[in-house]
Length: 185
Image (cartoon, rainbow, N blue to C red; front, side, top):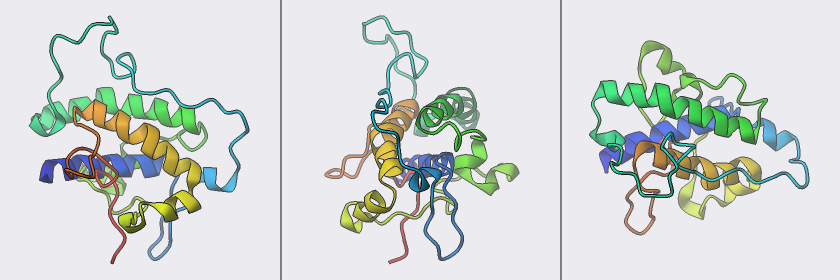
């Protein structure tokens, strides 16, 4: 789905940038967490909750579901990104690695193009991913960051965008390639 790809791309950029990933042409990205071990006994990050995504937590199903991102007008998308996604994702990344999320902004995910108002996703500035091996390379090279993305960033971003999490059987939903591009084959 073309719209899902745009959304997925946006997420990937944000995620890579929030983790402090840097990429130069021909190189693989590195993150601060790759150079320092995660302390033993670190508490797992919280899952997405109604409170974390700005909904009332009443124990009952919400009366009206927010419009899916791909169904929003450009103004609604900008408002959601600025007022919901940016603060929510910044908080999530700060919980994971406060230091690397210190300067979390639109540029974190959307790259340098954001300064010119270009928020198209996926971002070529984020770490390029190789799905051919089930992300084994990424899990080996960046275990903490990859697990954080898979277990926390993707589901949170999908929820914030009103999209289901990517389903590899149907190829529908929000996943890694909403933000990241694939390595060249």
